Length: 469
Image (cartoon, rainbow, N blue to C red; front, top):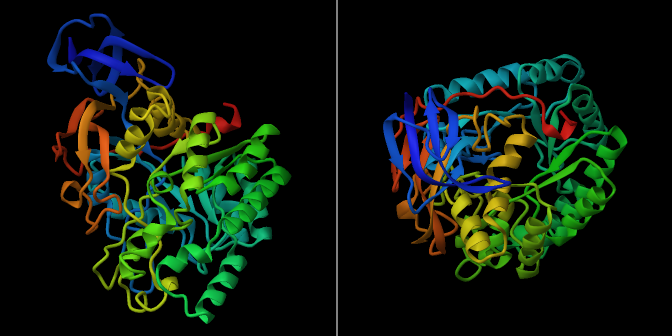
């Protein structure tokens, strides 16, 4: 007998849409058929879409910040919020601080996550100090241990890698078959622009966007692609914000290069004007992230890329800081100069509803493409497929039950994160996750998180499908 049978299911995957029943035993899918037989528990999905559980491949939780800044969400609150938003797996970053070994960074991150995860997790690495020891021994060992992706930065004082360091890291990634995620913004150009704006007295949060125009993202994207071409390694350009960097990615894809791209809700739901606040005041700090939201033409370009395959994944880049907090957005100095405002906004809980409403409900993308962007492709890119990211026999029984007609106005009062605001306050959406199931167990339903912070498992990963396996 089955443990659970999901009846009357309209199942949607990246490639198909069928009416069937789903049989579950010991947390895995064991049958998909017109009638899967008897089960100890029946779940009726009539009137709902049954999608693979969402995989948010880009979230920041409990990440060390320095300078007295503290991230709003740790693992407990961040994964709770993820579950409420229809996600069953999130992928945060274990940050290597300068002078720290990768193993020390990963061990500390596992300790922070222990018994605090409502959903499954798997860690990317962040490489900030690529010493000969790291490149020659530590990074290869970590990849072999299942940490098969890592992120590098082309900006930020304490994270930026120069071109030689990038090339060295890319070379290790090629040899060890690890996916490289690249934050592509030009460090020196941003420093130059910020200095010019400061000298002109333009220091309100809005000028954060002015200090990071698309040209600095375009240039860095081109440089990252050139380095990837030289070293023959797949890369993913993360949080792409507009047309200019997209054109570099399209150029690479047309030439058959293994270049992948990610975009995020802020680039389809916000613009730089949001950073102006009520009257160029500190309210604009709520929207400070990097790259910043752009303009309406950029939103149009992002939608073109979501439709035509320029973008492979849609992540939240959840990076939350409390607004009314001297350890968050209101850190000392932030009210006098945008450069001190912590970069990042919350979004793990609203990622799926925003894309569904703006994309599927408005007929800009298909429901199958929605699944591909938010679950299947993240699983493939980061070595979790086919255990995660699809509904198939043998896969984990991870589902999001979706009400495509449910109309909701996003509000901080609905959120389950520990941030004190949502940048999407007042946004009306059509389509909402009403039940989240992790390995057969309901962990969230109708706005209530029912699971426990011990429900999530850590996932060791295989090699990215980008390497052809």
